[in-house]
Length: 86
Image (cartoon, rainbow, N blue to C red; front, side, top):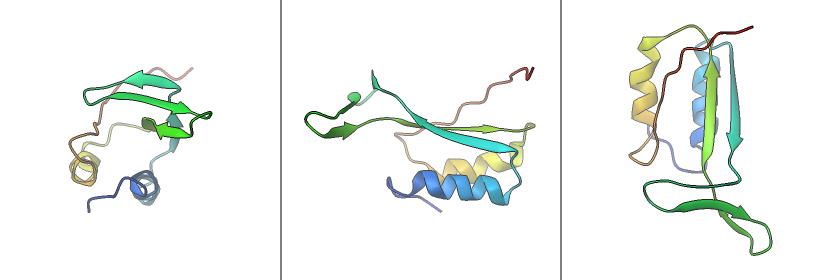
């Protein structure tokens, strides 16, 4: 299942919910750059070219990584981080 740019976040959120992930948050940046170009949101000129981030919080679940990798394309990435919840 490959997702289109517009519905990728919704498909990923639905996939995580169906797989009983404890929680997820979607957020975006104000300004930044990546390998392709500057990413920003400019309300004056109505330029919306921004990065979206989806954070999922749960115990490690390696079996979910291959389906997630199939949903995203070369301009997206998955990173794993161990965190301490206090």
